[in-house]
Image (cartoon, rainbow, N blue to C red; front, side, top):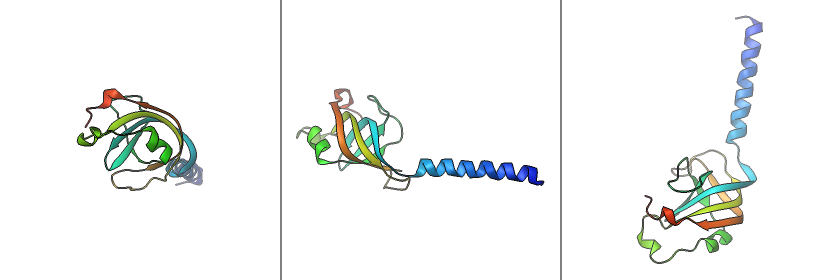
Length: 125
């Protein structure tokens, strides 16, 4: 194979690798908007979701005290499969791509901007 073909192919491979590494890296201080679904003992966050039913790849959410206080649970919620769903907007840190149980990423909440309970999500499983 001639050098006139090898160099462009190598350049394309290097650009593709750089784009993938940029996507796979963790990101700090990002603003997230989506749906938080609490399924004890974990919390799932669906980025970009606006309501129920939720779709997409969930992130494992690591909550802070401000978000915990904004998303209270009643004793009735404990008997359900899903303890609640909220439309949330917050600032947080996204982890690198990896394996966190069944999740590919985690998102750690640092500041909460908006929390709105979604009553239409009571019966999602």
